[in-house]
Amino acid sequence: MIDRAAVRNNANYLRNVRPIDPEEIAEYIEGGPHPAVVRETLREEAFDLRLRERDDGAFEPVPEEPVPDPGWAPTAFPDDYSFALEDLLVREFGANWHRGESGAELREAVRRLKDDYLYGNDVAYDRVAALGYGIYHLPAYYATIGHVLDDLVENALLDRTLRVLDVGAGVGGPALGLHDYLPDDAVVDYHAVEPSAAADVLERMLDETGRNFRSTIHEETAESFLGLDGGTAGSGDAAPEEFDLVVFGNVLSELDDPVAVTEAALGRLAADGSVVAFAPADRNTAMGLREVERAVATPESGVETYAPTLRLWPNATPSDGGWSFDVADDLDVPGFQRRLDEAADRGSGDEPGEFVNVDVQFAYAILRPDGKRRVDVQASADRCARMADSEEHVTDRVNLLAVKLSHDLSAGGNALYRVGDGSQTVDHYLVCTRETVLNDDLRTADYGSVVFVENGLVLWNDDEGAYNVVVDDETVVDLVAP
Image (cartoon, rainbow, N blue to C red; front, side, top):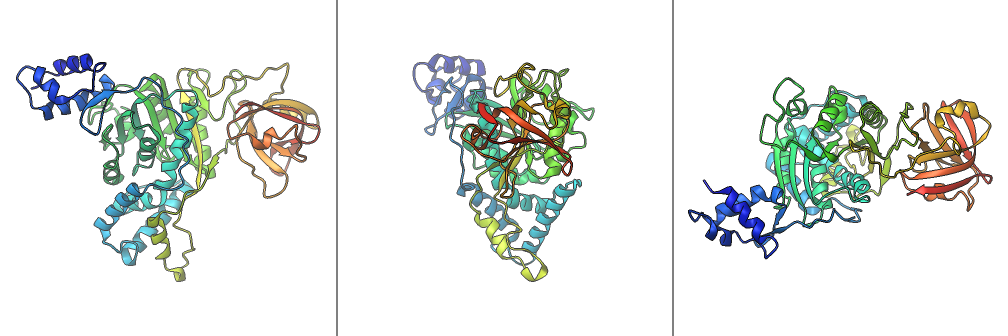
């Protein structure tokens, strides 16, 4: 048994002097342990010591600065990960995995998964379903998590040492995206909760991550891991008591009680940590995610919605439909999707492109227990009308403080943007009927930006059951917070 305290003490002494060499430390440890044993001990202690392992086997301190903006804008799913997925497919079905019976089986699995998500059915994963899920969803989920994390990085809220809990980790899209988003000098203690056959696919995909992305897979349900089923929380492999980042990547819609699981995850969050949840942009899953957010982030709980649906009025909670999602650039079609799609039997009704999924469109929420929000902006009654009071202002011109919660939703007519202020009880849209220099900030503002609308005309849209606030040549729109 190696003297771990001695290893730690020597590492702490050397950390500010020179790179920490396991062979050098071995010389100072009673009993003369083998350098390989010292190296493994350092790996196990690296997170607490804030050390990263270099390619040459030496260790050095992790920089104190938070994660910088990586300029996340992937255009394709990385080749190494594509090769790993295809390796699994070849092992399972042979070189022609996309053809014949195996190809048909995979395509049917993809169809079934798409239908289950669309209609809110229970989702079950056997080996084939897990591989089909990987083919169809890995690229988009890989890209999505980086776009979400940008909201934390812009305020320097993501540390270079991270304890991560990935609830319902699936086949690894969020894990791989997180790995590539972080700088090379980051150290991650990554824990995946995945009870299904997807865990085997996840394990193979995690083999492609670096030596400082140390992963553990807990093959149990989220309820079991978090102690909601009457068992002992985290009863499987050892896990930290607290996490800096908890990820729910397209899993909330699959849980029996997503609110209880999210609340339990918040209970395992560090005081300055974040829960990051995202879901596909389709109506059911996007609105389901927003329902969970609203149930958890209440004035009584103290949990704050950090982004993107900021509550701009104190103690307000929105109750509109909440169908809001962001859109990023499409990815290139990966070879494995193209092969599965091109091998489909068009005579059986398969549509070209049915098994291609490179659209990066997602609903998301970031929740924090420390009260922080992406931008610290609040509305005031002496300058703005509350969207909750729009019924009183129909045909009036008012000022609004609003979060832009969509890209242009029009089909070529007047530009249409979903907005909210955290008080709305029904859907609100800004409709630009006359674009001018004074209201151009509405068009150019990013998703999640806060804008001040001066002199907007409030109208009721009976067909849509929503309020349209007209932005015309009498309206000024100013960007308050990007």
